[in-house]
Image (cartoon, rainbow, N blue to C red; front, side):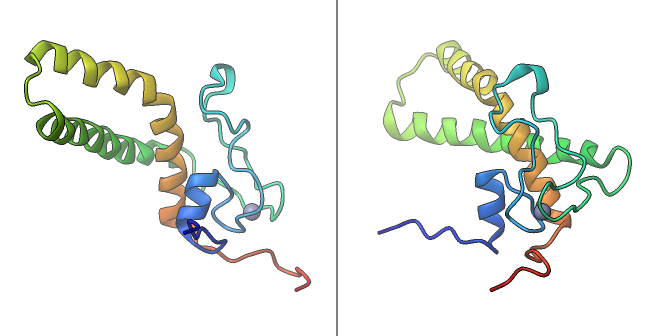
Length: 132
Ligand SMILES: [Zn+2]
């Protein structure tokens, strides 16, 4: 079965790092969250629909709450996986494993937290004047 991601769904914008407003333009300067020099820098405006990505200065500070929630979800899912799959692991090995993947995935979580945060405030409108 094909995974039905369509324009107009918030998940589309989040997973594809697209503008939450039109789902066409890019949201980040660079789509790769591991591109370290401009890590998860958002564009000022959507290149397609022109939507401003920041509602006010410091708008993306709120994304910290989202990244905190992602971090908690990360740790909880590791705890569940450990209980289900092994349940034998040494405590400090487990802490190391969780921490290692947390560090590894932090750039991705950081990018996700920003686009999730933006999607909480911007709704899909599509591009105006678009010929159908
Ligand atoms: Zn747009």
